[in-house]
Image 1 (cartoon, chains in turn cyan, purple):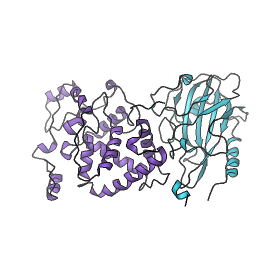
Image 2 (cartoon, one colour; image 1 turned 60 degrees about the vertical axis):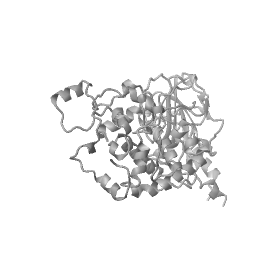
Image 3 (cartoon, each protein chain N blue to C red; image 1 turned 90 degrees about the vertical axis):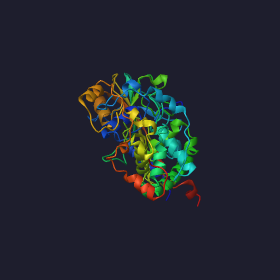
Image 4 (tube, helix red, strand yellow; image 1 turned 180 degrees about the vertical axis):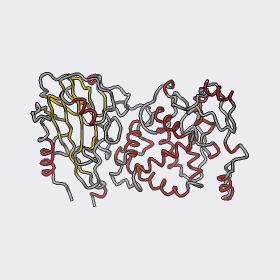
Length: 196
Length: 249
């Protein structure tokens, strides 16, 4: 059965909106997160999944709060993991001057980042690797992928390879803004099977 | 990023793994030779002269694998333990020869698994990256192997038996065995694997002087197979000769 995209959009919005407050119930400054190739409630291109080249997608952000000194990005799937979420990507130590991430960041931990991201490092995803790995939901299922962008009020010189939990511990108390984009991915049958 | 020649497994991870297991993994960047010494692995003089072997094409005589299967396996092995500034890797060590031979012997039960999963890998690479594995760039080959290892290569109707991760684990183990195992089994050619991990070789006795040389990094490697010693039974050779095989001793 084909997925209902409207249901996916609703699920994405429900996933993205309620958590936009800190541990004390204070609302985060909303960051606008966009991508030239993806948007909330829409399917992710195969290129960003293991059904394609599995390269990292491009992101753009704007409306950062005043006082932003550093940025962190986490992509997570709250429909997977034990316990959830399953983490697909973590990148942090991003300079406040960065306005987004280009497509296809390095899959080798010691490879240099683009100049505009100097200092940025990647954390460990759910597979234990400090790189981006895209959606790989079970065949026939639809999952939402939360690309969270955090604005921090300080410059943290965090080591590479942190897990999501370790990152969140380190940045707790420094988050002054947050935004999300929540596309989904449906892993259908092989193309030749779809044609039948 | 630009495609480059980084291996899917770092030398550091590789040597740690092998060092921990004795002289019997996986994935990210080439590291400097100086930082590659595995903790607890005896230091044997580095095989600088062997580095030149990396560029020497080896002839290949297949007993069980098809030529196409061998090409793919060898390409994977070249990413798992690449030849680099530290010296030759799995290809030069003849890990493929070990596997090809073993699939007609003690690994015969896994022959079908290789056939099916190599076909699945070919489908997966064509569907996801648009070309067979051997034609992909090194970075795309590594990306495929990472997806294989993580069990993500399940889409596109690839049809791996079990999981892609299980196939990856099997192939990785056989690459290690073919690179670091006793040369008697057809791999570890010219003791490349043992030189890589600075393994001083099989010895029936170690004197105090040997121990001191070992600790000083001055012990010369003993380039002998365990089966060069009469006390070790050649069980595999016996089975091979019963099949009429010509390899072995």
